[in-house]
Image (cartoon, rainbow, N blue to C red):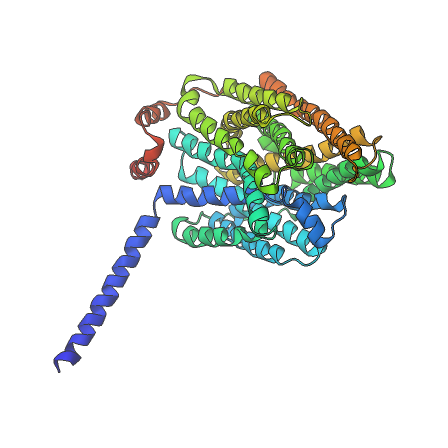
Length: 527
C-alpha cells in the first residue's frame, strides 16, 4: 500500500518539475539577446552562401562536369533568386506574418542545402542553389523587419543594426574562409551540408524566441516578383554572354532587351498594384534611395575583390583552397571591429553622411591597393587592401543601413527592409556580371591559360594578373560612384527627439560584453 499511494505523488511531482523546467527554459529563451542571436545567425548563413562556393568552384567543376561558362551560374543561380525574390519575401512577411515566413524560409534553405550536397549532376546543384536563394529571400528581409520591430528607433536599434550589418558585410569574406576550410579538409559538398545543422538550430530557437506579427490583408504582387526577378536575370545573362560571345551576339542583345522590357513592366506594375512588393513611394526619400544605391555599388566592388582575389591566390600564387580561404580572414575581422567602432563611438561624434563618405572612401582605397598586384606581390601588401576594404565596408554599411530605414512607415517596414538586402544582392549580381564581362574583354586577345611548359605558365599568370588589375580598376568606378552619390544627395536627418537623446545617454557607457544585460534591461523599460 505505501508504495501504491506514493507513486502518483512522485509522478505528479515529476510532471510539475518538468513543466516548471520547460517554462524556465522558455523564459530564458524569451530574451532579446537570444532573439538577436537567432536573427544574426540566420543573416550570416544566407549571406555566407553568396561566397562559400567560390573557393570550391574548381572542385565542383571537376566533380560535376561544369563548363567554364556554366560554372558562374553556381553563384548566380543563388544570387539572382535571393535578390530577385526578396521583395516578395518581405511583402509576404507583412501579409502572412513575419515569424511564419522567416521560419519557412530557413526550413526551405536548409532542405535545399541538404539536396545540393547530394547533387550528382550540374543541373541538380543549380536547382538546389536556386531554391536556396528562394529560402534566403523569405528569411533575410523578414529577419531585418523583425529586428526593427523589436528594437525601436534609437541607440538600441543602432547597435542591433551594427551587429546585423557586421554579419551582412563579414558574411561574404567568412564564406571564403569557410569554403576553403571545408573544401580542403572534407569535401566541396560540405559547403552545402554545413547549412543544415545551423538551419536546424535557427529553426528550433526561432520557434521559441520570435513572436508573430499581426498579418495584414492584401494580395501578393506575383507579377511584380516575376518581372523583377526575370528582368534582372536577363541583364545578368546579357553581361555574362557579352563577356564570352561579344556585345553584338544575338543572345546578348536579346537578353538585354528582354531584361529592360521586363523591368519596365515591373515599374508599371508597382505603380498600380494594390499591394506592391516595392512601393514606389519609398524612392521619394532622397537619403533612403541614395543609401540603397550606394550600398549596392560598394558591395559590387567588394564582391569583385572576393571573386577575383580568390582566383589570384590559387591560380597565380599557388595557394591551396585552405590557404586561400584563410588569406581573407582579415576581412571579417576588420568589418567587425570597424562596425562596432562606428556604432559605439563614431556615430555619436560624426554626422551620418560623414560616416558614409568615410566608409566608401576607405573601400575605394582598398580596391586601389588591389589594382596594383603582380605575380610576386607579397601577402603583406595584399592584406592592406583586404583590410581597408573590410574597414570601409564596416563603416559605410552601418551608416547606410541606418539611413535606408529612416522615416519608414510601419506599413512599409517589410518592403524597406527587403530593399536593403536587395540592393546588396543585386549589387553583387550585376557588379559581378559587369566585372566578368570586363575581364573577358581585357583578356580576349590572349590565348586561354595553358598548362605545360614554364614559359606558357608564366605567360598565363601574366594574363591573369593583367586582367585582375584592370577588373579592380573597373571596381573602383563602382565605389567612387557610390561616394559621389552620397556627397551629392544624402541629406542630414532630422534632429533627435528628446526621448532618443535620453536613450543615447542611457546607453553611453554600455559595453559590448554586456550586450545581453543591456538588451534585457532595455526590453523591460520598453515594456
